[in-house]
Image: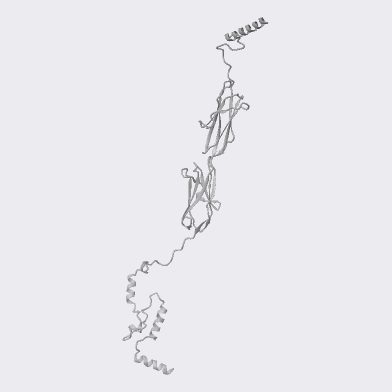
Length: 330
């Protein structure tokens, strides 16, 4: 029994020595022999959406084939590593690696994914995909002045926030576009767009503003808050001539031509008869000082007849005699 055991032990020693010396090339490669070549791989990149809004999550999925047993995928955005997605392990059954992120600013994003490889599979990539991030906007509208009259200039101002990089604002009155304010460009620095006009007639106006948006900034709509703008009729100018603080009229005085001055000098006196009578005197209550030039001729004649009948001047004896005869005959 001892001899067979010794023979087995001796055979084991010989085999170990042969392996160490490279005498069995079929079992272990000899020193300097070439390693097995790495298997080639490919990678493709998918996105959960082609367009997302700011704050909305998006997931990128890289698929490596044939499915490797190890390795990781690195994701970049416009050449910059995406946080938490610099070395995502490849899932051994599906060959997938995922990256989820979100954006706070709008714009186009170029995404790339690269497989790093392992001891048996080659590296692959990069694979590319693009995602557009859009931005929601809000618009408000104000008017200056808040109350206006016909003929007064009115200005409507729309504020788009956040301030977009382009686009226009459409101003409407009762859903009808205002002719001069259909495409007002938005100032990219302030987000403001203004519309100024003058109304020719009174009435109420319900004003609205529509930001049309662009490739990144979405459209928005708003109406003028509160009641409709009322355009009032302009006050009528007073026909009363202006007066000074003392009450005197400040209008331009009438000019007197030389011919009118001569005619006025030749015109007989318009003083009351009592002042023209010899020895006559004014009654205590006083008499009118004369008639205006513009009065009607008939009124002046009637006034003179009344003056003769009621004149305080003493009558002549002949006139008294005629009056007596007339009274006796009556």
